[in-house]
Figure 1 (cartoon, one colour):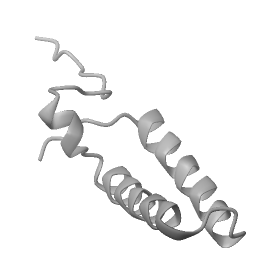
Figure 2: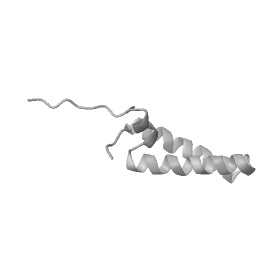
Figure 3: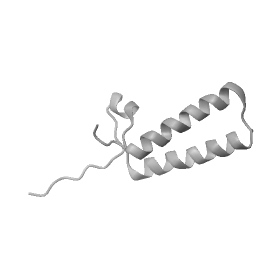
Length: 71
C-alpha cells in the first residue's frame, strides 16, 4: 500500500471523526443514521492512521504531494 493521503487530508478526517463522536455522544443522531456515521468514523480513523485510502486508489487520486528527486 502506497500512501496517498496528505497530512491536511488526514487532519480533516480526524476533525470529522471528532464531530461524529460529539453527534453520537449527544444523541443528536439516532438509529440507522447513527450507525452509518459510526461506520464512516471508524473508516476515517483507520485510513487516517495508515495514510492510505482505498477509494483514492480506485479513483487513481492522491492528495499527497510527490517530491521530485534531484540528481
